[in-house]
Amino acid sequence: MTKKDYYEMLNISKSANDREIKRAYKRLAVKYHPDRNKNSKNSEKKFKEIKEAYEILINPEKREAYDKYGHSAFDNNASNNQYHESFTHTTDFGDIFGDVFGDIFGNSREENSKGSDLQYNLNLDLEDAVKGVTKKIYIPSLKTCNKCHGKKTEFGTDPEICKTCNGNGNIHTRKGFFTVQQTCPVCNGKGKFVKNPCKTCYGHGRIKTTKKLSIKIPAGIDNNDKIRLNNEGEIGENNAPAGDLYIKIKVNEHQIFKREKNNLFCEIPINFTMAALGGIVEVPTLNGKIKLKIPPETQSNKLFRIPGKGVQSIKNNYIGDLLCKVVIETPINLNKNQKKLLYKLGKSLEKNKNKKNSPRSKRFFDGVKKFFDSLTK
Image 1 (cartoon, one colour):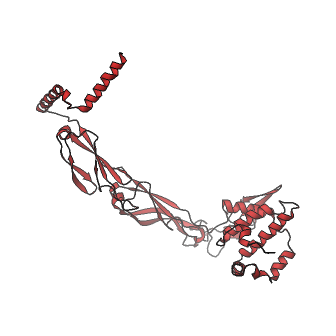
Image 2 (tube, one colour):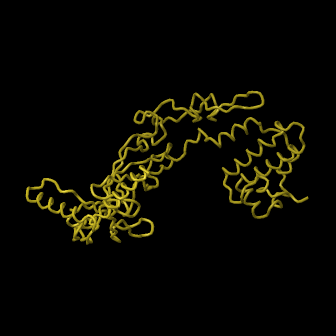
Image 3 (cartoon, rainbow, N blue to C red):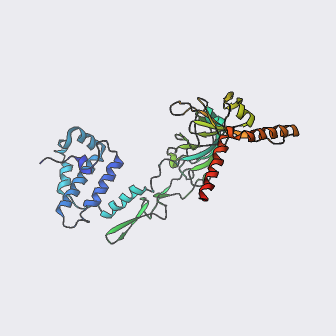
């Protein structure tokens, strides 16, 4: 009878790593373990199959042979035949159950795990964010203790095996059918404890330091964007690789411009004479001033678009626009002559109000008249 493929038995791909193989085996072992399926021949058979598949695939040499020659690689393997003949339920269900949860939620004894990622909040002026800049920053960090070199112990001593958990980092407590896995309270899941801690790092293996970095900010970066610097985060314990450093950008408010994606917005105040007669006004950009032509009879809040004077996209090099909203400013601190001229202008406009000098006012008051007329009907 043709044997089923080992990878199919564990429901994993042929490129699966050791961790994926272990997780797949433990998941299936919990499902088919004889302790959980009393008097089930099918479950016992399944358990044998997945255990056989696991023991082949978790062994690098056996896995290589299996990948090359398939099941025929083990047809004459005495130890493999012996395994089938002398099979007993030596794998405790509680151990499998505990290990599964250890894999899912993280093994507390994994001492050589990568260090923590760090985040640094960097404030930038709008000009620097738009044009790009190089910034020097100082970040608090940890480095390997230069006295114990990360061992955490005094020179000439080593960490001792925890006797409570026998170096496992976890203890198991039987509660009926289930076995509950708990972190060892003595060694806090490390499996070892430091009896003679290093006097420089006080048994932590790492010491505090300040790291200076030069950060190149690309042109066009925006608020809340992040820059990732590999291996510039917190160094791991026992000389494990460092985590990553994330630079989070916060762009300061600008006194003139507001940014929306790749466009810039600003308000341009003009007097009502220019609004009525038209003229030329100087408009600021991030690269100097340009002239903007205001046409006659321009109304307040009119928006003018100036192409290509916005922000260059960091993704596709597209350059946004500058949008200028004109705001008509009411003059203050007028002298007598200016007031007199405005008074004459006002009288002239009143006499000619039916000639549509003020179309918006006319529309408004016509609407008001219609509203009250409808109320009296």
